[in-house]
Length: 199
Image (cartoon, rainbow, N blue to C red):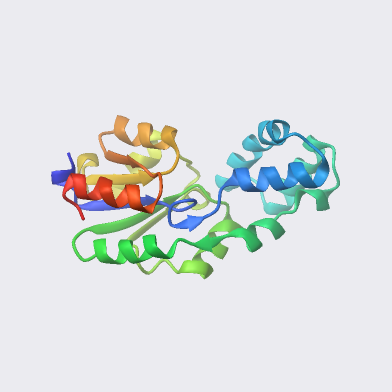
């Protein structure tokens, strides 16, 4: 399938930018004396609402505080996000090299604030296309989002190699016909590219 690749499409968080929601959940849990599982269980739904653009940051913080039984300040958002994100520079350099041979795209589940701060951090000029859930009202692993991206780029799904650190998103991409790589770090990703003849 990779021989047909015309575009390499990347997830943003924990692939191009180091950050995961679990980092935030662990921080909330440790600062408020709560269990990580409880925080994750009560926050994941809100995270999807934020990523899809259906709630604002203020609403997210208020709802999170109510769900967790803590003060709004105990949610540490966007404070934690702003101070935790950092670029995966080797991956950004690799994206630039790949762009000489393929289209490159970014597909992210991100709220409006996360999107803006990430754009300020790395710029999105190294990508031909950016698909952000907050603007599209669709989040991974929705097949609709993958099909939309393919159509927007005028490509068939088998012409796209998708990279994500979450297995459910990789599985979803494969179900619509894309080649997909589960991201397990920079070195493993380079080996996966080489195996496909894309490096």
